[in-house]
Length: 250
Image 1 (cartoon, rainbow, N blue to C red):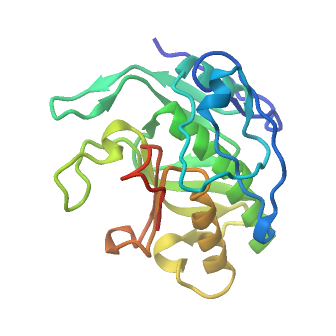
Image 2: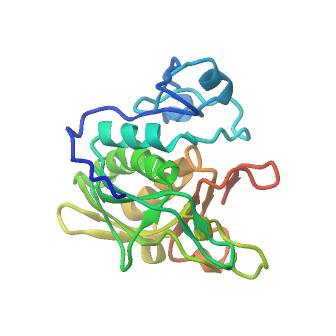
Protein backbone atom coordinates (compact mmCIF):
# COMPACT_ATOMS: atom_id res chain seq x y z
CA UNK A 1 0.00 0.00 0.00
CA UNK A 2 1.27 3.44 -0.89
CA UNK A 3 1.16 6.15 1.75
CA UNK A 4 1.35 9.80 0.81
CA UNK A 5 3.11 12.20 3.12
CA UNK A 6 2.43 15.95 3.00
CA UNK A 7 5.05 18.62 2.61
CA UNK A 8 5.77 20.06 6.05
CA UNK A 9 7.63 23.24 6.96
CA UNK A 10 11.00 23.27 5.25
CA UNK A 11 12.64 24.38 8.48
CA UNK A 12 11.69 21.23 10.32
CA UNK A 13 14.67 19.09 11.26
CA UNK A 14 15.56 15.72 9.82
CA UNK A 15 15.92 13.18 12.61
CA UNK A 16 16.84 9.74 11.35
CA UNK A 17 16.23 6.77 13.59
CA UNK A 18 18.85 4.11 13.34
CA UNK A 19 17.69 0.62 14.15
CA UNK A 20 14.47 0.83 16.23
CA UNK A 21 12.78 3.85 17.82
CA UNK A 22 13.56 7.53 17.98
CA UNK A 23 17.23 8.16 18.74
CA UNK A 24 19.85 11.01 19.57
CA UNK A 25 23.47 12.07 20.04
CA UNK A 26 25.36 15.26 20.71
CA UNK A 27 27.03 17.20 17.99
CA UNK A 28 29.84 19.73 17.87
CA UNK A 29 30.73 22.15 15.12
CA UNK A 30 33.90 21.22 13.29
CA UNK A 31 35.22 23.96 11.06
CA UNK A 32 38.47 22.21 10.24
CA UNK A 33 39.81 23.61 7.03
CA UNK A 34 37.09 26.25 7.17
CA UNK A 35 34.38 23.77 6.18
CA UNK A 36 31.88 22.34 8.66
CA UNK A 37 31.48 18.61 8.15
CA UNK A 38 28.91 15.96 8.91
CA UNK A 39 29.24 13.48 11.72
CA UNK A 40 28.73 9.86 10.87
CA UNK A 41 25.97 8.05 12.79
CA UNK A 42 27.13 5.39 15.21
CA UNK A 43 25.39 2.03 15.57
CA UNK A 44 26.76 1.74 19.10
CA UNK A 45 25.03 4.98 20.12
CA UNK A 46 21.86 3.92 18.32
CA UNK A 47 21.72 0.63 20.20
CA UNK A 48 22.07 2.59 23.42
CA UNK A 49 18.99 4.63 22.50
CA UNK A 50 20.74 7.83 21.38
CA UNK A 51 19.31 10.25 18.81
CA UNK A 52 21.08 11.32 15.63
CA UNK A 53 20.08 14.79 14.56
CA UNK A 54 21.31 15.09 11.00
CA UNK A 55 20.17 18.66 10.56
CA UNK A 56 23.30 19.96 12.27
CA UNK A 57 26.97 19.70 11.42
CA UNK A 58 29.06 17.52 13.64
CA UNK A 59 32.60 16.33 13.89
CA UNK A 60 33.72 13.32 11.90
CA UNK A 61 35.55 10.59 13.68
CA UNK A 62 37.55 8.28 11.41
CA UNK A 63 36.77 9.22 7.81
CA UNK A 64 37.22 5.57 6.82
CA UNK A 65 34.57 4.30 9.17
CA UNK A 66 31.25 4.37 7.38
CA UNK A 67 28.18 4.09 9.59
CA UNK A 68 25.01 3.12 7.77
CA UNK A 69 21.86 5.13 8.27
CA UNK A 70 18.67 3.56 9.56
CA UNK A 71 17.58 0.10 8.57
CA UNK A 72 14.20 0.90 10.11
CA UNK A 73 12.02 2.02 7.20
CA UNK A 74 9.14 3.27 9.33
CA UNK A 75 11.41 5.50 11.40
CA UNK A 76 13.17 6.76 8.26
CA UNK A 77 9.81 7.59 6.65
CA UNK A 78 8.74 9.52 9.72
CA UNK A 79 12.01 11.43 9.68
CA UNK A 80 11.69 12.39 6.02
CA UNK A 81 8.16 13.61 6.60
CA UNK A 82 9.27 15.64 9.62
CA UNK A 83 11.99 17.24 7.48
CA UNK A 84 9.47 18.49 4.97
CA UNK A 85 10.05 15.86 2.30
CA UNK A 86 6.95 14.77 0.37
CA UNK A 87 7.17 11.18 -0.85
CA UNK A 88 5.31 8.00 -1.69
CA UNK A 89 6.16 4.61 -0.22
CA UNK A 90 6.73 1.92 -2.83
CA UNK A 91 6.38 -1.85 -2.41
CA UNK A 92 9.31 -4.18 -2.82
CA UNK A 93 10.59 -5.14 -6.26
CA UNK A 94 12.64 -8.24 -7.09
CA UNK A 95 13.84 -9.54 -10.45
CA UNK A 96 15.15 -12.88 -11.67
CA UNK A 97 18.55 -11.26 -12.14
CA UNK A 98 18.81 -10.59 -8.40
CA UNK A 99 18.01 -6.89 -8.61
CA UNK A 100 15.49 -5.10 -6.42
CA UNK A 101 14.69 -3.87 -2.95
CA UNK A 102 12.34 -4.73 -0.13
CA UNK A 103 10.92 -1.23 0.00
CA UNK A 104 11.63 2.17 -1.53
CA UNK A 105 10.33 5.71 -1.69
CA UNK A 106 9.59 8.11 -4.51
CA UNK A 107 10.37 11.69 -3.51
CA UNK A 108 7.73 14.08 -4.84
CA UNK A 109 9.18 17.26 -3.36
CA UNK A 110 12.15 18.08 -1.17
CA UNK A 111 13.59 21.54 -0.53
CA UNK A 112 14.18 21.71 -4.28
CA UNK A 113 12.94 19.65 -7.22
CA UNK A 114 14.73 16.41 -8.11
CA UNK A 115 14.20 15.90 -11.84
CA UNK A 116 14.97 12.96 -14.07
CA UNK A 117 13.95 11.55 -17.47
CA UNK A 118 12.64 8.54 -15.53
CA UNK A 119 11.11 7.69 -12.17
CA UNK A 120 13.40 7.85 -9.15
CA UNK A 121 12.66 4.98 -6.75
CA UNK A 122 15.31 4.76 -4.04
CA UNK A 123 15.80 3.33 -0.59
CA UNK A 124 14.80 5.60 2.26
CA UNK A 125 18.43 5.69 3.39
CA UNK A 126 19.48 7.15 0.02
CA UNK A 127 16.58 9.63 0.01
CA UNK A 128 17.55 10.83 3.49
CA UNK A 129 21.17 11.39 2.57
CA UNK A 130 20.19 13.08 -0.69
CA UNK A 131 18.00 15.43 1.31
CA UNK A 132 20.78 16.22 3.77
CA UNK A 133 23.27 16.81 0.95
CA UNK A 134 20.77 19.14 -0.69
CA UNK A 135 20.03 20.97 2.58
CA UNK A 136 23.48 21.33 4.08
CA UNK A 137 25.83 21.25 1.10
CA UNK A 138 24.31 22.05 -2.29
CA UNK A 139 21.89 24.83 -1.37
CA UNK A 140 24.42 26.82 0.70
CA UNK A 141 27.06 26.34 -2.02
CA UNK A 142 24.69 27.72 -4.66
CA UNK A 143 24.19 30.86 -2.59
CA UNK A 144 27.92 31.08 -1.88
CA UNK A 145 29.11 30.85 -5.47
CA UNK A 146 26.19 32.31 -7.44
CA UNK A 147 24.10 34.40 -5.05
CA UNK A 148 21.03 32.55 -6.27
CA UNK A 149 18.85 29.90 -4.61
CA UNK A 150 19.04 26.34 -5.89
CA UNK A 151 15.90 25.29 -7.75
CA UNK A 152 16.62 21.83 -9.12
CA UNK A 153 18.92 18.83 -8.77
CA UNK A 154 19.10 16.99 -12.08
CA UNK A 155 19.40 13.21 -11.84
CA UNK A 156 19.99 10.66 -14.61
CA UNK A 157 18.41 7.87 -12.59
CA UNK A 158 18.44 5.70 -9.49
CA UNK A 159 17.13 2.11 -9.65
CA UNK A 160 18.35 0.17 -12.68
CA UNK A 161 19.01 -3.56 -12.97
CA UNK A 162 22.58 -3.58 -14.31
CA UNK A 163 26.16 -4.49 -13.49
CA UNK A 164 28.93 -2.12 -12.59
CA UNK A 165 30.41 -0.94 -15.89
CA UNK A 166 33.09 -3.38 -17.02
CA UNK A 167 32.55 -5.78 -14.10
CA UNK A 168 30.51 -8.92 -13.56
CA UNK A 169 28.67 -7.93 -10.37
CA UNK A 170 25.58 -5.86 -9.82
CA UNK A 171 25.76 -2.11 -9.31
CA UNK A 172 24.26 -0.43 -6.25
CA UNK A 173 21.75 0.96 -8.75
CA UNK A 174 20.40 -2.58 -8.97
CA UNK A 175 19.23 -2.28 -5.36
CA UNK A 176 17.94 1.31 -5.43
CA UNK A 177 20.89 2.45 -3.32
CA UNK A 178 22.55 4.78 -5.85
CA UNK A 179 21.80 8.00 -7.74
CA UNK A 180 23.57 9.63 -10.68
CA UNK A 181 23.48 13.44 -10.40
CA UNK A 182 24.17 15.25 -13.68
CA UNK A 183 23.64 18.90 -12.85
CA UNK A 184 21.96 21.72 -10.96
CA UNK A 185 19.62 24.54 -11.93
CA UNK A 186 19.45 27.85 -10.09
CA UNK A 187 16.36 29.92 -9.43
CA UNK A 188 17.63 32.54 -11.88
CA UNK A 189 17.69 29.95 -14.68
CA UNK A 190 21.41 29.23 -14.82
CA UNK A 191 22.36 25.57 -15.23
CA UNK A 192 25.59 23.95 -14.02
CA UNK A 193 26.40 20.52 -15.43
CA UNK A 194 29.04 18.02 -14.41
CA UNK A 195 29.98 17.36 -18.03
CA UNK A 196 30.54 20.98 -19.04
CA UNK A 197 31.64 22.63 -15.84
CA UNK A 198 33.39 20.24 -13.44
CA UNK A 199 36.91 21.10 -14.64
CA UNK A 200 36.10 24.74 -15.41
CA UNK A 201 37.79 27.64 -13.69
CA UNK A 202 35.57 30.08 -11.86
CA UNK A 203 32.38 29.69 -9.81
CA UNK A 204 30.81 26.79 -11.72
CA UNK A 205 33.81 24.53 -11.41
CA UNK A 206 34.45 25.53 -7.80
CA UNK A 207 30.81 24.87 -6.91
CA UNK A 208 30.82 21.41 -8.49
CA UNK A 209 34.09 20.37 -6.92
CA UNK A 210 32.91 21.51 -3.49
CA UNK A 211 29.57 19.68 -3.59
CA UNK A 212 31.34 16.56 -4.88
CA UNK A 213 34.01 16.61 -2.19
CA UNK A 214 31.53 17.22 0.60
CA UNK A 215 29.25 14.46 -0.68
CA UNK A 216 32.11 12.19 0.37
CA UNK A 217 31.35 13.10 3.99
CA UNK A 218 27.83 11.81 3.66
CA UNK A 219 27.53 9.00 1.11
CA UNK A 220 29.31 5.66 1.31
CA UNK A 221 30.65 6.05 -2.22
CA UNK A 222 31.04 9.23 -4.28
CA UNK A 223 32.45 9.06 -7.81
CA UNK A 224 32.91 11.86 -10.33
CA UNK A 225 34.84 12.86 -13.45
CA UNK A 226 38.21 12.28 -11.80
CA UNK A 227 37.33 8.61 -11.27
CA UNK A 228 37.00 7.49 -14.89
CA UNK A 229 35.50 8.41 -18.25
CA UNK A 230 32.20 6.69 -17.38
CA UNK A 231 31.61 9.42 -14.77
CA UNK A 232 32.54 12.39 -16.93
CA UNK A 233 28.95 13.62 -16.96
CA UNK A 234 27.65 12.80 -13.48
CA UNK A 235 28.33 12.20 -9.80
CA UNK A 236 27.55 8.68 -8.64
CA UNK A 237 26.53 8.62 -4.98
CA UNK A 238 25.47 5.50 -3.13
CA UNK A 239 24.70 4.05 0.29
CA UNK A 240 25.95 0.53 -0.41
CA UNK A 241 28.39 0.48 2.49
CA UNK A 242 32.17 0.25 2.50
CA UNK A 243 33.94 -1.11 -0.54
CA UNK A 244 36.83 -3.34 0.55
CA UNK A 245 36.87 -1.54 3.89
CA UNK A 246 37.53 1.83 2.31
CA UNK A 247 35.31 4.87 2.05
CA UNK A 248 35.34 5.50 -1.70
CA UNK A 249 35.67 9.12 -2.77
CA UNK A 250 36.96 9.88 -6.25
